[in-house]
Length: 459
View 1: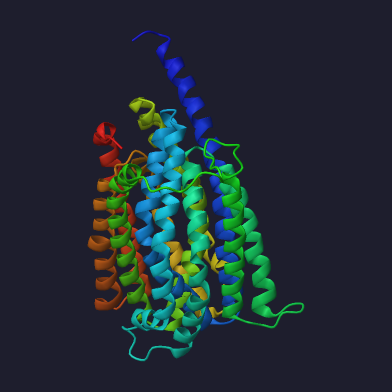
View 2: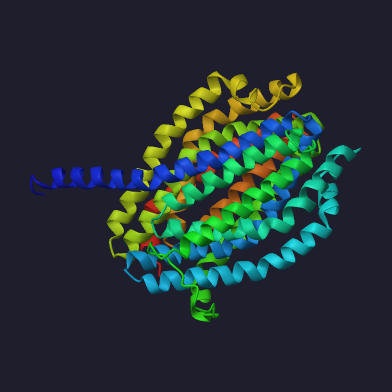
């Protein structure tokens, strides 16, 4: 080894870190904006009482479960776009975007129809473990779902186009669109939930309608962005959307394992939520509050995960597996540093964070215990988010699926049932299961990344 190699490596590592930050910071800001809406929603709806907060939380978890089927398209398209851009093939990247929009639009119609019709049945099923389900929670959750689900097509358009833009390395446009959309949501909440100005107080329904308006504005802006013709991804209004089965097959080949992963993960989350919902309204509300408080730490994690997805995918597409590997590790290290700091704050000042979302003493007490518990798993969560993102970026979705399914079903749900119900620990037992799951998955994902089999995959 010559004497000059270490300095070159140091220079490359410094340049790589700058590239990671350039990709990560807009995504961090975007996630900050996304979380700010979640925080604002939770804080504003929380002022209506634990029942309203529990209703919106359960409704959103049902919707996230149903959205798992779309992950095949979103993750598959992101991988194809990242590889294509890395190889300098913008034509294929743009065609992948078109095919993704076709598939998402077609799949959204049955989702919207069935979700609207069977909203009450789904909410009742979520609370099946309760001896006497809280009808106030079921009624409010049903109302929220029936108002928001018809507008999910707007959310899906935003998700699809934003995923493709990120795969192409454009994290700023999704940040700007998300920021505007979220401002609309927060302002709408203020006027519609509490009845400010000329608007009547609509409560949970007001939160639903402000969400719809925000999604509509975001969809219009993101569609306009890809028809502007300024970036690597750009669509022409005069070009027809013809089905390309070859591109669709490439997207689904990568995305199908991801869809299975997301489906099994979301179903595990649903069962996990049912375990929590089987306790009482205070536990459901405390669970929602603690998760919202913890979500503050997701912002840097999501940003560095996106950087890993883009750089690992593009580096491998450009034929540089060594740089791809370094991108994953450096993203993980940077995320761990920031998220560990957040964990320290959660552990030392849990009441401050949960007090932002609820004034109910029982909710604050229980949520504080959960937040202090999950604080110790923040380093593990950082590695889970970044390494899983890097593996998805190169199309290694099969191993991510296997590890995720094992973590959620084999560890989280199993331990939550044992500790929360069998051992009688309540909500704390459910959160113990979550912490152990994150630690186990972080170890398995890092081992898979280090093994390096993903470097030989073709997309």
